[in-house]
Image (tube, rainbow, N blue to C red):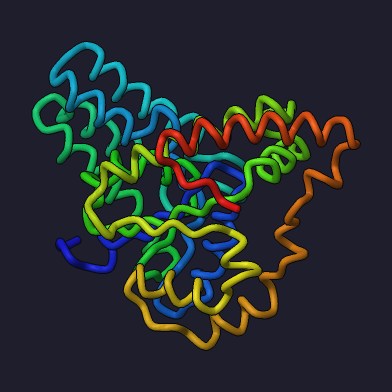
Length: 294
């Protein structure tokens, strides 16, 4: 995979979780030049204790026992958690376990010598297999952590484009509480949203200028639909696509984004407490230079 090829120009979409990154991924999947990865969240690169985290440790502590342990943990999570998440969800749909185990072994034995090269090779081998199965020229990944790990991902895929989708933290928290994963307490979910917004702000600041586009979900879904879609296409370097626009107009709606759902999901007393908690979080974020979505 040569530098500058479409295979190297990944589109990495992320957010705080429950912020709309999946919506953006599906929109881009309907563009003729882009293909959503399967699984659409590959996780093994940007997820917690993934390849990006192991590389960050190796660059801080080269050839250390801590760096070796981080690399081993990344491989363990790749093979035990991300390779086959469910019968129809996982890397196993595109490659054999034996292949990944062989590549992972090469990664571990070369990590001390050249951690960046080792990380790039493993990541690109796996992503190339996904692209081959999908007959894709350019992949889109929607792992939420792409946002808060954007700086750590840049050395691995320097030509990638990042889209960060932001959403009202109260709606994010309400959405998490309604799911079977993530925080089940709305105030814990709000605290997690704040922490992830801070980390994303820091990660974006550490990226090259122009690599990251921040998209408020309400701009895309309600306020500036066509303009925001055009900004996304311009950011990733593709023309507007008629099929994509048609799918977007038919499927991406304000009702589907559930704006203000937190007001409907909780009683008046809970809403007042949520609003107060959120206001304090927003004040801290704003003081730290973070732009809070409307």
